[in-house]
Image (cartoon, rainbow, N blue to C red):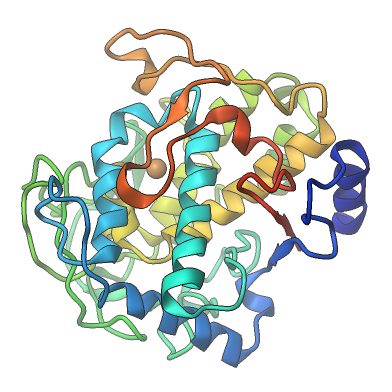
Length: 346
Ligand SMILES: [Cu+2]
């Protein structure tokens, strides 16, 4: 797809705002296209988050600023998935991650995304997951288990070759502290109830090609231009997945599996941010292709409307805890709006 024409169409329609133009917007790129040095700079900035102190006195299990991100995702878990704010909350959340890396950790680049369609048959060979020094870690150590159950237990995935602690790459041996709360992998036992329960342990993965096989070009076409592209309700439902079907959002989490396959504490896997950048990239493309729908929401304020809640509106406030200002959903629609977003995708 000609991404450059999409960008131009978006800029022509919305215009830039203030100092945000196509020339000044941050360009989020495919991890595979970053140079070795660019990858190292990103990794160094993520490592810096483990040295920054946590801020929120309520989230007592958080030991550092990396955990602070995990904690708010746990805290808001029931109000940001299968809700009207799913796409915009996560758009804001990864923006704040990018901002923190830049403002507090000296990072100069934009947030890289994980291109789902490369290496999907062999995740372990992917430059993002191959366990090299310039990756976000490789597979976990072998841990015998009986596969995983995804999408509220309705989709079975066979076990991969990992399942235990991530054993290679720049983050090997580091400690995560929050969760697991609702993991999907057999043998990965949920022991925690909240972001206040301290549970230091290693980060686990089970690279699962079977999950990555759910990334299909037919599926992408269906979302962007096909039957499920014509309402925000269909688009976001089919992007996330419904009982019995794992779609792209779930497929990314279950491709990495282990700690990534926990709807609450999944940001424990540092590749969370690359997966969600790709998800946001698909949302961005959909918005450009459907300008009359781009600034709409559908759904309620609670996870599959459980417990029942009001319909979401564009004025609903996105609660990101101490990570940033609490802004309305409508401020997230325009990635060139400059208040606060100014980025495009390559
Ligand atoms: Cu999430």
